[in-house]
Image (cartoon, rainbow, N blue to C red; front, side):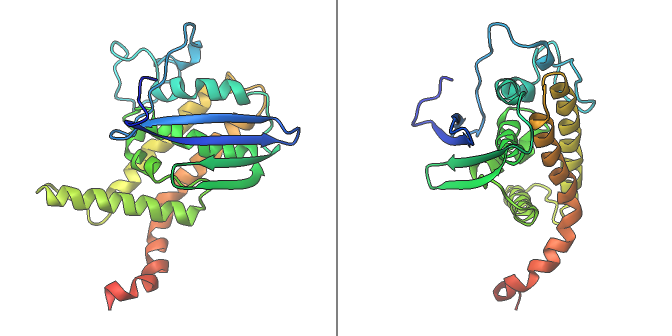
Length: 236
């Protein structure tokens, strides 16, 4: 990575296993674009090529993009965790500039949180819609927290569109399409990972993310109703 400290911010994941081994993963992101820049290995695996289980909705041209950006950025992590079982116990500590989060959990939950950041910041045009959430990353978020953050992000984008005199989607109709497409990416990345993983940690971590992605648009209506009373001061 060529980013300087001044131009970047980092999110660091520490995985501490029962045998006391600690593995650290530092995600360095461009402050302005929130994009993760990765170096290409001298001999990258064949499963990261763009045309290998390429998503049917992928807008990238193979002539311009040799590798799937998500697969490229996940390749090292996938190799690291391919011999782990999903339900193995681990302590995960996530460190940002502002604070640290820690949880005794399963590998699939900790890994899923890490994979989510990488996918959203990799430069995939489909996943780009989730990239703003990387800056305000909340590890181990519940479905309720995820829906709230997602809707807040979407509404903020619509507000900015309106400020700039452009059409804005006040009824949140676009969220369903965004998450349908995200689900397509999840499914095809899972097909890529199936050829890499000896055990199930990678696949289960991604499956958990996909479950969240499928539930988010379904929960928006109920979420709006459930938090209406919280917004009393605005609505009175």
